[in-house]
Image (tube, rainbow, N blue to C red; front, side, top):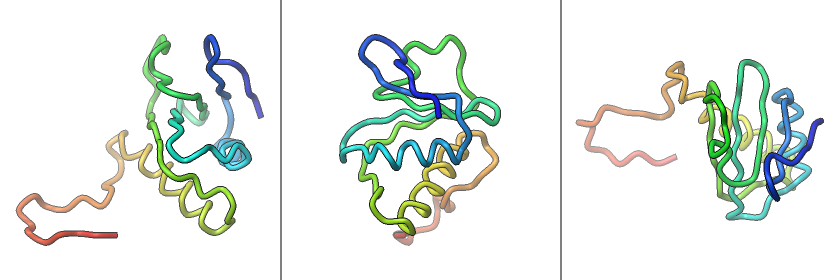
Length: 111
């Protein structure tokens, strides 16, 4: 797994596989509220602290920033969380419909 400084004082890593990304983020167990940027270029993933797009020469295929709770201490919860995080990242590519419903549907939808 690659881990290298992305720019002055910013940690990050990549390129790596999806499984390597999962293992890396889980091992880091970021604090709740810490913002991490994740991107995919082709089949390769990378991550960095903060806003990874600031210094990008070209836009990645998909990206997401996350700043919530990282459930790194429970296997089952981590697998479901990481799968959902990647699915949300991939929804940017237009190939997924992430829990969207018609605007004229009056019901409140909860997960």
